[in-house]
Length: 419
Image 1 (cartoon, one colour):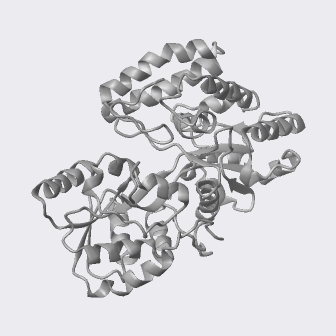
Image 2 (image 1 turned 180 degrees about the horizontal axis):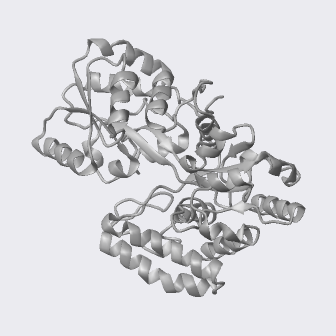
């Protein structure tokens, strides 16, 4: 099984850098990722094996940023390599990170995100997680004519779910609309990017009206009990849903228990591309790193295919480079990994990143999208009226948090505007 992502010519440079790593000094790897004891131990003993003398130190976001800022302000420090989520890096001053051009790791989409709106590689994509589609293989016979399950459109998904409903007499599309479901991430990272090429700026746009009309069409072929569904692996296993959307971890049990019964595949595409929400982590080098050669060698080590597979085993985050997954991985990892790779590497990939910079307004932000769904789709209220009603509330959240726009919205100076 191959991750169809390009290494962007980095292999030669990686080999040169890795060959010299053993001769380098100890590197402090300061990370917000792989914090649980078991993951941190696996990072040290497996992922970083052969990387030379590395001190891997995971921390919560607060302490991570406090020490980093102290070193940057002092103009010197001990941190050699940073590991963090895209949102952590996007909040930094680009001048505080070393340009890593030539060490690009993943798809053109991810490499573009890693430039953070500059001309330089601010960080190198390291690992990813995401949300995917999954289906019972019984549903495959009802795919629309000419449809490619790895390149579906929203119209084809709706037609497919309609075909299943007509054939079985039951609506078998499953959506995580329950109290603990991650429905808000679907709207923020999938529906809105696919139809509006944004999520905040475009919240009340005419394209957003079309998006919610499409969501109504999808809901018409959705199992109405979805308002109680939160982990769709349960409905896949019970047969209450044959086609579902959910986080990779929330369909894993179905694939691990009955791997031959289910298939995983990318989210569908709309007029503005194949919206998807990657949880993207990267590695970067602060300008105060004490040994640039050793730091770059460690970054190069993290991109080696064998290191990426070891990282997957340690963290359940998927590779961002082209690798062949070994056969001894759990079925859920193999199935989801292939779907994530196809989705992030698609020519029409349009990532809608996790909200960043919202602070304590994050819950209120997501609740607004949930309420929009409840009013438009569940209560059948007028789409334009609801969007116009919620628009000032969304702007108030952005103003109170001060959060600038994130992809796919165009960058902003100051709080992201709701246009």
